[in-house]
Length: 302
Image 1 (cartoon, rainbow, N blue to C red):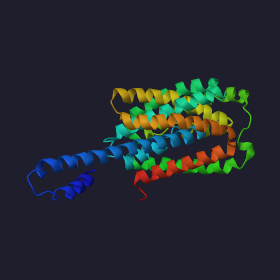
Image 2: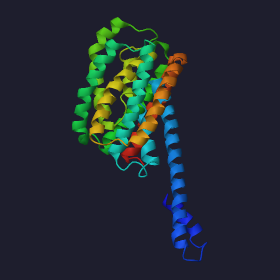
Image 3: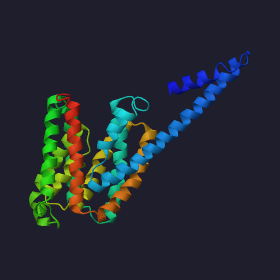
Image 4: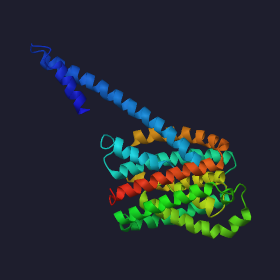
């Protein structure tokens, strides 16, 4: 924006030789500069709205919130022009995640795909894990841990990709008896999901969905829908705290959030026509990107 204003100033400052230019030309400069700034601002809002639609569609389709996409975008494209601190980036992203999860959950509830006997206890279980993670996060943010966890995520994505070709590894029908037998395991794993999510600032769905598919034998469509309910509850708690801490930049948050609301409805409809293996493959890609991101951020290999 500074370069634009300097360009406009250089264009106009030598056009008039009389003393009136001291008063007229600066007015022209600021008028044109304001028009340019307003145009760029409107374009940014429109781009964020479109990004929100994409995040909502993809996130709802595979059961994640979209923070994996929004946080890098906010960090590299909108800092420091809009965001001035990491808490603002996280808080604004989490607001978009919450609206995405809320809209997607509403759509999935109407489709009768949310398994509430798992969704409610799992959502409650993530809360103490998230609190514990926030308390000990300073001890788990070292480069070595980020590198180790990034490699772990890459291994998980590779195993999931390999298992996706094995029809026996993915349940097509839900076995409630099996879930009851493994419910305690699901609650413990949900606490771990909340713990990891709080430490790394990622949506729990990207871990929760494979846990439900492979450890609890959920069909992929039911896993993504149930995970979205859990995400809506856990992200609401996070958004509430960020609002009180004044960490949300409201204009981009609303632009991305309203886009995500629309995208979530699109994603929920697409999921009815998407094969389970396609959902698994999309989730593998997301996990792979997350693993690469954590390895790069460790600064130990590059």
